[in-house]
Length: 249
Ligand SMILES: NC(=O)c1ccc[n+]([C@@H]2O[C@H](COP(=O)([O-])OP(=O)(O)OC[C@H]3O[C@@H](n4cnc5c(N)ncnc54)[C@H](OP(=O)(O)O)[C@@H]3O)[C@@H](O)[C@H]2O)c1
Image (cartoon, rainbow, N blue to C red; front, side, top):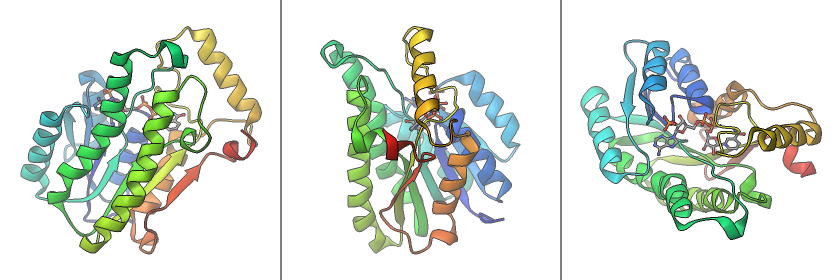
């Protein structure tokens, strides 16, 4: 029970890596709140996480939604020990075809949303708290057709380094988990033809030293490590969990 007595918010906790993290945290003794936009998967997640869990319909790209979610968490839990800023979207497109609307939506959720989620959560966080941001291996080497997504994840890497220095004065550790290809509903939910998704999946599988995708729980285990006292001396680190993919990309 590495998180006994702790309270945690996982944004994008109704699917994929976020849901696996919420389940793992609950099993480790935490009380969890999750956010997402899709009411059906939010309800399914709430049932899976049990009565004590708080499942909030909240758009990470809207400041008023973020503030309302924090108000509800304060009312239910009083404070937060762990924030996992995980919600994100991917809308791949060749650079010259990226529309302003796509740019604004992706940066609004993937960068601005994370920035203000952390800012609005801070008043609830006490000394000894931990923040983990989900980045991506695309932030190190780029990813063709993912220009906006990869740049947002690089911005998050920078933000983690800055905030880890600013917030440690309050006793709050900030770190990142950087997943490689992971088998989630989000991988391939890109609004592109299925054959493109299948080709990307095959390419990643073949290039991967392990010849497979990560399971969401394998990423969640890294998030748990950084959230727990096991990582008490780890500050401003980006933990790559990619089965070695970035070594060969
Ligand atoms: N899967 C991979 O291969 C991979 C690789 C590297 C990094 N990552 C990162 O891992 C994280 C989790 O992704 P995943 O693969 O688990 O994908 P996923 O299954 O699609 O999960 C993404 C989650 O984010 C939520 N979300 C998206 N936009 C949101 C918004 N505006 N407001 C609130 N919630 C929002 C989604 O819920 P709703 O749809 O209900 O809004 C969903 O719960 C992301 O940060 C992603 O960039 C994934």
